[in-house]
Image (cartoon, rainbow, N blue to C red):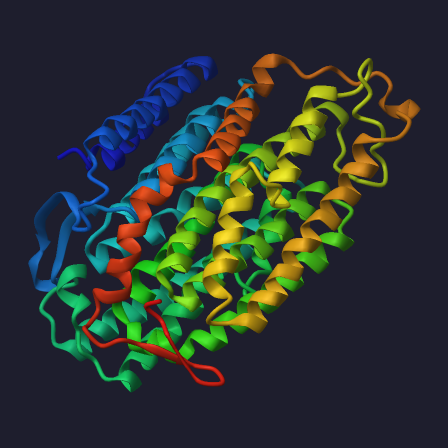
Length: 501
């Protein structure tokens, strides 16, 4: 029952945080302790996890609602384990970064823990209907976290997020119900549906709503418009979880269910997905250049960088799928660091306007350490060698280029534009003469910067040792590409290119 710990420990802790008569400091300590225990459980699991074993490990299976074919079925493999680790770590950081004076503290920490448990449940579910239930459950806490503790337009942003993600869930459910109905299966068990032998036309019929639903969650252009509003209005801890964890549910679903269940249909739509990824990458980068709000710059950057995951998934080579998994981890860490540092700047200056902020790298009266960490985060996002952002993007492009050379080239241009919009932001905000309005801003403390140091260390270490993640994910990439059938899928461009390169 080890995997159940990742779901039920945060759920139980959420109940305690909501109903125990504790002060804000005590409630935060309870939530932080629970989330830290989950990180420790991840470490214990890492020592017991066998990367060479491509089957689901630590399986749990309990019949739940037999007439619906629903079971409480959990398992973990090289695709879900790294994402589970990132989710657990960023939850600790989000709780730690929350101010102790936050209003309605019991409800707030209960929602954070509920969100963590729901995301873990989605990553661990081995039943399609169970995945859908957790996929929908995470909407509730995130809606309230934005609507109650967000900015001035929090109501609009929260409702927009709710509507978009509700549509996403509806489309995913249609695809799941359709695959069970068309195959005549008596349950929603993932492994039982892997070898469904559906003809290509039926696969396409089911894959279309699934791709749109998961593209909304990722998000991919043109289904992205909820994300910038949600980020701008959300508090810093919620933005960390939104970018670092929630977006990965979309790309995880693309690999697990899109590629895993509909390999032949996937090969037919792959050129369209790669083209959409290129458009999304260029669009996100172009919009980021035009932004005046630091948070919006990072938000649109997320749209561009998540498009690389779609490109790699569309190429469907063993290298590109492995790279897609690494890119998800990389983006989770880098985006969390960026939003954390933007939050510190906003807390100290009261502004995120790049036209107002100046000279924050000033060593005497500015935020020099925060600025230095921001430069490191920007370098990681721009793909500077030695950091995890470089190796993940390099592998994405290397694995995708033989299959989709033109789309990969456009994504490479989008990657190059990362340096443009982030250098514009860094140059305006941190360099130059400190303006008189910012001459007496409070200094950031070491306590506030600890999470940023942890994330920075991980970004560098994993950049130097990416094999620590690849060793978990690479065997699983081969399973995703062969687990559906024995038929070798192919993609038609100017000719046919084998997807199993």
